Length: 114
Image (cartoon, rainbow, N blue to C red; front, side, top):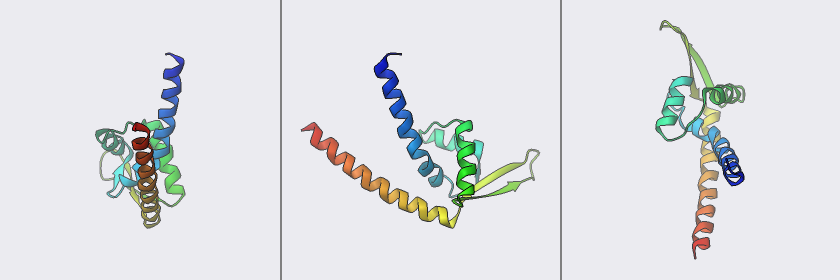
């Protein structure tokens, strides 16, 4: 891999990592377990590894942004995550900031094209 490709790859990883919290909060309105969230995010165009998602889910739960419950009715118990009321407040604030930042970046990109 060329040096330029490495730099771009690293920057894309940073950009992706910075948006994962918001995407997880946006995708936890309905209860879902980790593997289903990986699939949901993948279908939406966001690839995330399980070894990245599970620690993030635990951290968001510890911060009070997600709530969890176990479903033991199936042969394999699953831990389901749902956004908490505090998580909804944070999600909404993050969305507002995302839109503001995106608007500024779009404006800068348009000006750069001139």
